Image (cartoon, rainbow, N blue to C red):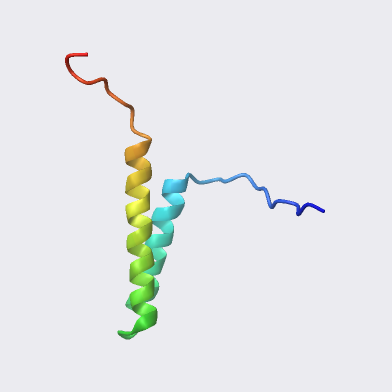
Amino acid sequence: MTAKRNRRKQTQSLQQRLTAFAENARERARSLPPGNERDMLLRLAKQNEVTSNLTDWLSAPVYPRRGQ
């Protein structure tokens, strides 16, 4: 028996979703006292920002090298 996949149309791009998650995580971290939970939220926010930047970099147009 195969499991049915949960499919839905995304209304925002991956980059927008990653940025929104990072902003939300930073907001929640601001309201917490220093500790493990706050550190985890800040780490997740940073990871999502880096992933967003990588996605942007990977989707950029490729330019041919000079001299080729």
